[in-house]
Image 1: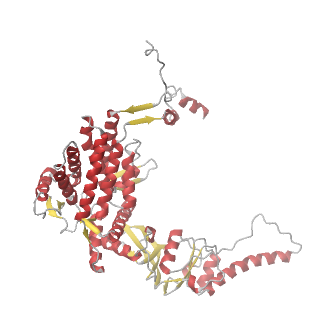
Image 2: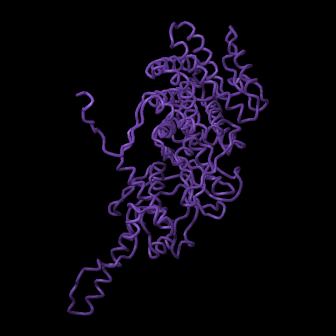
Image 3: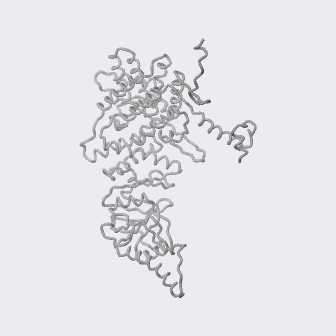
Length: 564
């Protein structure tokens, strides 16, 4: 009887929503699978694009997994994990963002029946981690090094990696053209690791093939004053002065008070202001520089002064452009024009102002330290150029990775099939339940070749059966075989130069397995009632604001509306 009379223990605040147990885990898995389904169709050379329209009215057309994941406003807490792994893959390697989301979704899909049958999630997690370790060891074993080759050979090998990345993007039709451009840009910045040393400038108009690479710096002509047109627009071996000061006629501080006893003294104050600016301009000229760039404004007086002395100037140059000019020409940005010595001046072989589309560009080429490059992109629609920029960013990241970790593996689903075969074989040697779990992990890896076939409109079952047969050959000759997108059959992707850096695959398998294990290890979700009510308020306010639902929201929403 006393046991019956025990008072109820209230642990959480009233209204807190807790969901736990198997149903909660299955619901999280379903949410992650739904997210994976969104990007599923964007995988590979025949992948479709997504058009995303946000509340501000901006339209983005993209094929890049990370971009799509960022733009999808995902609110489900478990599904957000997939957004995070796509972002991490993008920042770490640059490509393979769709792959990583798909793999994580597929691992969870394979785990779902086991969870429903009452398998403890920790058993699955342990087996998945073992399988991931074995898979990564296999990738390292199969990877081929491109180290020790001559520069020309290396260039063509890196271009192959870039072309593989670009083949799945909007600009895939011109992949050879852009691949060589990306390789040249990455080799131009050498060992410098900063990505912002490669500038990408977008100019609408023209077609893709009008895009070009500047071995140096290019930026749009800045806002100019009268006298600008009289300045020379081309120099050979000029000296370049970089400033971070204003060269404008400035009146004294507004709140300064000067008491004069004689009107002629006022003139001396005005003269002093003019002398200050003339002194600055004179020092710039005496430094011997033929080009003066400043981050702040160069006024009409300065522009005319420099024009009379055959000096080119540009004010309000963007910070990153100025830093890239400094890195390329060997100059240093000055915050004062006093004591300008030769060491702080930059130089380049050729400076010219050139018309690109309907924009004028200032182009510095043949720079001595040469650790920068600029790609000027042309194209029809703005959205198209935006997507081209994102695609090139991926390709640049891939080439940088391939330069550093110079090992590549066969792409197009070849490496995935080989790991899958190896894991199935390994699973047979294990006694106990984990044999089933590792087998399911191996099956999940086949999602990549299957999806490549589906997106291209081929019969996935047929192609996968051919691939399984080829990879099962004892001689090992079938290892590099993957999906052939052009014919709908299978082909030796290593011989066909469908390559990707091994680091992309290793990172993708690692991140996808970690994400899947993380989702599997969650067994309870607690929702705080406070955050719920805050969302309710916002919704009520929005509804009431449209002139309806006043009575329906008598609670906080109604009060909120009256307060307005």
